[in-house]
Image 1 (cartoon, rainbow, N blue to C red):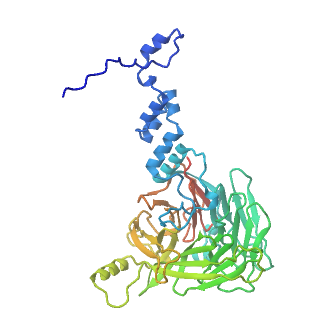
Image 2 (tube, helix red, strand yellow):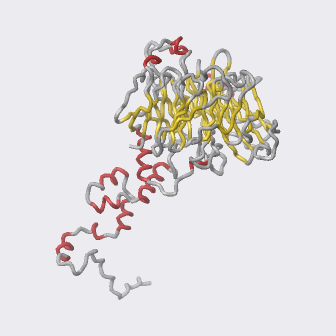
Image 3 (spheres, rainbow, N blue to C red):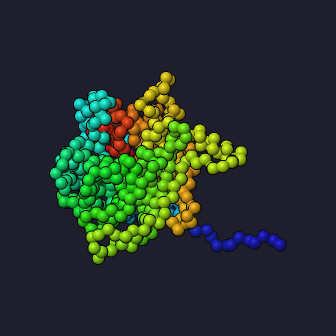
Length: 535
């Protein structure tokens, strides 16, 4: 069979340049213009999709038209999704939910993704996180008298200020003893605001030991702040209101309430953890908080962290990570899952008495869990691997509901003869797998070792974990960032560094917090530093 002959119809004429025919210089410009300049904007943008972000930035210096097209928002959105694979910046206290059940802690309601986003700016911020590029500034200077005191004197000094980031607000608590402890609220859009916590009864000076933001708040305007004091009192304030809206005053000081070291808040549920590892659940339906459950552990020890979520209506899930001891004198990490349920929490018609509350289950797991009885070679090999990850002391444990990080410590700040190296005290990363809420009684969470996070050249002073990102503050003042999902880690190196007067006296009790754009670090002497990646 012969080939089909071509159509006798003539080809369409070539596309003409985008020039006005009435212009006297039309022929001159047409002869001097290049083929690239005659293309439509849509075709040029399609060509730009094959370029890297470095090439796009270089194109902005060529001519005005390329500079305009290389700033296209949809173009940078495609680059951002290809490079980072998400529709938002990472760093919120929680993470977006998925249908496969892998995530157990949803984003706070006030952390909703904005409808209009500057994708180039988001790309720049995320790239700065990956490279450690930032700008530093000092929010508060520390006291040189506190920084120069001896170890025994500093034991009686207050801990580092509590720092919380929520949206555009930076919330910093005072670490000084006071009859009316203060909380500083900073925001670029409003003047500096100070909340004074008025004690319900006259007593000795107290300090703030823990802060928590209501995760159920719908907007930044009506945020509620839970404040725990060293005497066991608990107060809840609205962000822009001087008066308290909830309070709890224990009748006397007990190990259950004083001192409180961790607090988690999702209205109307508030959970506190004391230094003696007593877990208390409160109902905030009424102004006077009611104790609804008390749990105690004799095999769990600080440091610890709390994650409180609401996976189902009127069902709360609490994850507690802590230091877990094992024979003969070593430590690992453990996790306990507490499920609480009760329809009475949101019923406003109840009388202000002790409400009923159902404790569905408590399930625990440890990173080092030696099987009972006789074991075969496979289980023996697993036990030896777990034994190799034992630590002599723990500096911090953190979780975001999906990952668990253990930071080892050096007892009494003993430095090895050769000094510290990045591999001396690596952080241990574990994957947390939680069973379904309605699983059987013998279903337990599972901790699976993933890898070591190497970087810090010395002991860790503070640790923070959220949204698959881990940030650590070393006693030497260095800050490291790890992306737990992609596996990279980098040291934060500011472009212009602002050194507080006590930058090398952070000690072992610093605090650190971060969101999607910045890191806040605080020392025991009161210095508060901002590491801003939006540069």
